[in-house]
Structures are given as C-alpha cells and as structure tokens.
Image (cartoon, rainbow, N blue to C red; front, side, top):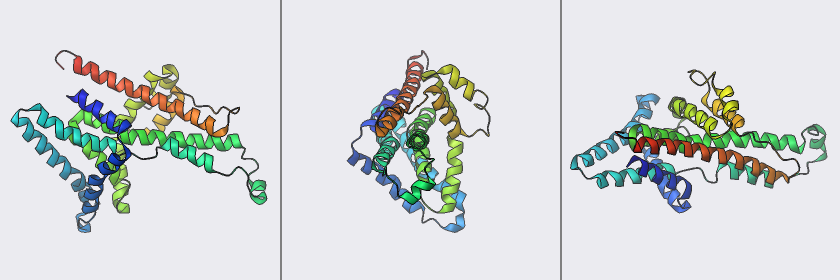
Length: 282
C-alpha cells in the first residue's frame, strides 16, 4: 500500500488541478490561523509543538483505529486524502516559471544615468545571476514540497508527512518568533533528505563529479544542506547559458536541464521504494 500511496502523492504533486490545489491548502491555513491564537504565555516552542502535534496525534489515532477494524481500504482512504492535501498544496507558479516570466518582463533598455553605473553588468552576467537564483529557489522548492515530505511519509507514514507539511507552512507565516523557530526545526527535518537528494543527484547525473563535491560534507552535522544540494546539482547537471540563443529561451533550457535531473532523482527514489516493496519479507 505504501507504493500505491506514494504514486498517488506524486500524481497529486504533478497533476492536481489548480482549483483542487487551492482547496487542498485551506485546512492547513485554517488550522494555522487557529493555532496562531494560542496564548503567547505558552512560549514559541510550546505553541509550535502543539501546532504540529495535535493534527499528527489525531491522524495517528484515526489510522490506528481503522487498522484495528482490519480493513485496509479504510486505512487507505484517509491516508490518500491527507497525502493529496500535502503534495497537492505547492507553490504556483513554480520557481522556474516565475523566473522566466520575470526575465521576459524586465526592460532591456536602462536610463542613461543607470547605464553609466551598471555598464559592467552585461546581459550574460545578469542572465547567469538569474539562473543561479532560479536554480537555488527551484531546488529548495522541490525539497520542501516533494522530496522531504516524501521521505518522511516513507519513513513514518502520512502522520510524519503532515507534521513536516505544517512545519513548512509555519516557517512562512505567523509571528516572527514562530517563523524563526520553525525555520530552525525545518533545517533539522531536512538534514537527512538533503543528503539523500545529493546522493540521488550523483546517481542520476555525473556521479564522479558529484561525489567529489559531496563526499567530505555528506555526514558532517554542520554542513549546510541547501548549499550541499545546490553544489551537487551543479556538479551532476552543469547548467550553462547558451549565449547564442534568445535570453529567455536560454534560461528556460538551463532550467529544463535541472528539472530533468530532479525527475531522474525522483525515479531513483521510486525504484528503491519498489525494490523494497517487492523484496521478500519486506
């Protein structure tokens, strides 16, 4: 059932209609709005812990009660509903599309006063900077909305996926104290997924170059995970700007290469899951 639920989650991530995505985001938003009203006297850590743990405990109790009944379908349906909400609620439009639209909409001619100050910033330099920013944002977006929740679901059922999902949202909204604390917890929750994703990039791309980049920092507790996957992706699938092409097309082609790498890395994850599911005694 785990493999089937994982496939359903990926279908929600890649193919859920936009209207359904907006509906999927409402329960989490409503819960976080309610949790924001918890007394400040409880402290940021307690309030954040309650925000995450209450839905997780409720879901765990529901799933366990359904398991006691002995009907797999009764467990599958709420799990599928929860995973569709978790993986269907993604940032739209995606990072790649946002940066492409930004590049197409920017003006190519600058005022003379600005031109004198920025004449050293050529189109190639500006496009390279845009690509680096887009690559970094796209990797973080995919990590937080796909790979990390998928990891926690595979490790500890939809209950853990819901906890990560709420933590991700808490890091974006609420009071400053809650956001900072949630971001720190999110870094801890991403520690293993970032290492697995970097290894997946090595398997899905240039293994030798990627391994040279990640091997020294892979198991270091203080190594920044986001920087690790940035450098691993760059080594596995070098993204170069084609200066002969139209700038927006060149940026789009470079980002397509990165998206292709992430899709191959996802295939690595799913193959490993399929092998684990089919392995005798698993």
